[in-house]
Image (cartoon, rainbow, N blue to C red; front, side, top):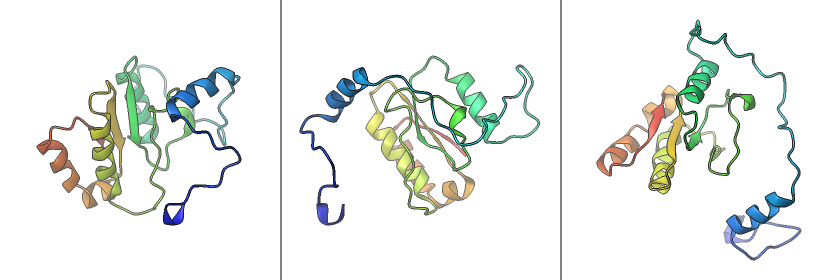
Length: 152
């Protein structure tokens, strides 16, 4: 998509993406999620994990947000696909893919601003280096009262 050109496509659909996606979903059969490798086994119910790790964060996040509309803005590379089911386009926004450090907090604040008033709770999970390199974005979130949960 250099120089603002359109991405190559087999079929160009000239309509609103939400309308097209809703119509397309009515035609698709439900499919099993394709996850590489064996999913990690969850910890025994009621027993806290021995270590704080990504799986423990995912389990507690799922427990605390059950029944709520959540948008996971950013997740770490080690997040396994079985940790959470994504059923709506706004359940997970994806990753920037640039490989740079420090973009996480800024992307989370920007996405949280876009989600303001949507009824969704914006949540980002970032690493400590990402957090330290982009911490100034949190000042903007506080100053402009942008609701966001950022887990480091």
